Image (tube, rainbow, N blue to C red; front, top):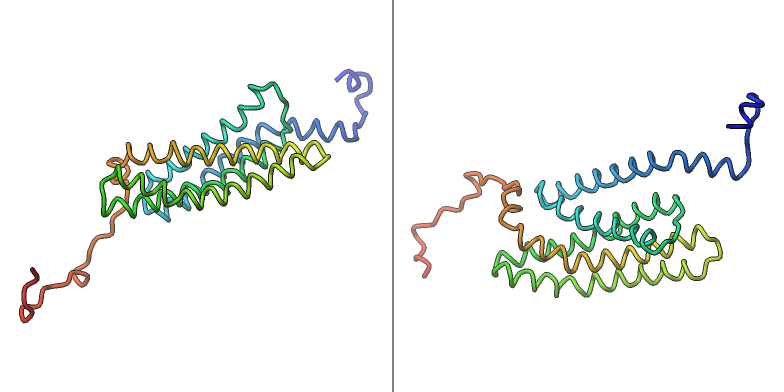
Amino acid sequence: PEVKRICPQAIFSGESMSAYDLNSSFSHDNILISLLTVAFIYLILAFTFKSWGIPLVLVLVIQGAIFMNFSLPVLMGNNVFFFTYLIVSAIQMGATIDYAILLTNRYRQAKERMPRGEAVKYAISAAFPTVMTSGSIMTVAAFLVGFLTSDPLISSMGMTLATGTLISIVCVLTALPALLYALDPLLEKTVLKRKRKAKDIVMPNPSLPPQV
C-alpha cells in the first residue's frame, strides 16, 4: 500500500506476490471446495442408499475427522500451507468415505437377520480387515511422502494426509457404529422404500401342499 501511494502505476511481480494472491483467495476457495465436495458426495450416497438420512451420518463422521485432522497443527503450534487445506481435505473425504460405506453396508445387511447390537459387532468385524488394509497402505504411503520429500509443501501434504487417514479409520470403526446403532430407528424412516406392484406379489398355488 505504501508503494502504491507513492507510485500508483507500480506493478508487483514475483513469487511473494503469487503467494500473496493465493493466500488472499484461500478462504473463499476453501469454503467453496469443501461445500462442493460434501454436496456431491452426499448426492451420490443418497442415490446409493436410497436414503437422505444415512448419507448425513457418513458425511458427518468423515467431515468430523477432517476437522480433527486440521485442528492438530493448531494445537501443536505448527503452520500448515494453505495448499494443504485445499487438497488434503478433498482427498481425505473422497478416499476415506469408502470405509464408512463399507461398514454401513455390512451393518444394514446384518441387521436384517440379527438384532442391532449383534449387527454392529458383525459389521465392525467384517469391515475391519478391509478398512485396516486399505487405510494402512494409504497411511504408510503418505507418511513416506512426508518423511522422504525435501519440498516443504509436498512433505506437509503427505504428513497431513497420513494423519487424516488414521483419524478417519478410528472414527469409522468407533463413532460410525455408535451413530448407526443409536440413530437406526430414525435412519430407517429416511429410506425410500419401493412400493410392491401387483405382479411382484406371488400368489399361492392351491394345487400345491401347504408349507409347514
